[in-house]
Amino acid sequence: MDLVGAVFRPSKRTIRIRSVRRCRGGVEPAPTVQHRATFRTVGKRPDLLRFVLSELHRVAPAPTDVIALPKGAPLGAISVNVDGRTPCLSCVSVCPTGALRDDPERPALKFVEDVCVQCGLCESTCQEKVITLKPQIDFRAARARTQIFKEEEPALRNRCNKPFGVKSTIDRIAAKLEGRHWMYPAGDKRLDAIRMCADCRVITMSEQQFDPFVGVPEGAAPRTTDDYLREREQASKN
Image 1: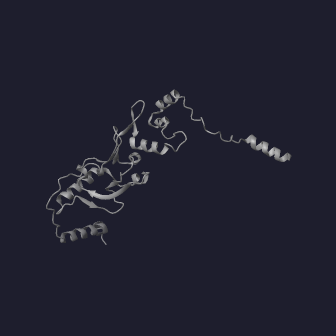
Image 2: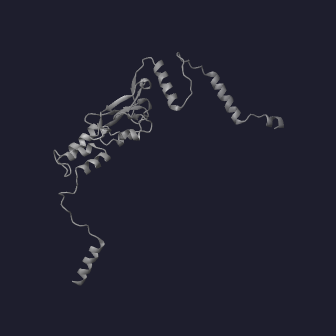
Image 3: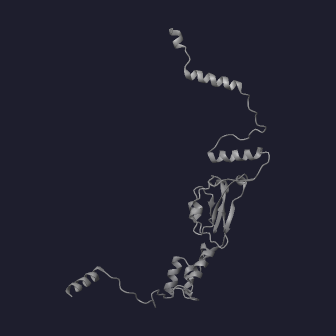
């Protein structure tokens, strides 16, 4: 083998590249799309995903607004059974994307499907088990308005008349305590303390000279270490 042949001998990698080029030359070009996309691949991943879905929906032969997806898909909505339920808003505090939102002015539960990733935290956090995940693609979600699942009137404090909490929640607590707890007899004014803030509650109790321990039978005194040592000493003497 001469020196020139050894230097200019093609490597295995060069031969593979040439083989691929020959194969490509024998393949007919694929047909191009009839409708070119009108978006540019810029922005973050969520924005790019929205653009791609909108373009796929635009050029589809028979566009469908909603397509159901299998369980575990990262797109979708939720359904909330609001019949007789109270918006505790615990699901809002755990939502990582802000798909579930509240209203700073009044008790309300709102939902934005466009940013929901179907993580399932809201479903597992709900105390009343009324939230269900719905994996789907809704091509109208990017242009849809914020959905309001539940909206209620705020509860007003009896004394200072300031809003606090949810009215249905306060009413439910009062109904469960009235006549069933020794501090809240049926028809007693003490029940109004539930609808007061901490400051108003203290002022009202001082004005009424309310003593929560009046009429409560005294329980047994708590046992201490001295009691156990005294019993052991007496037992040893006997």
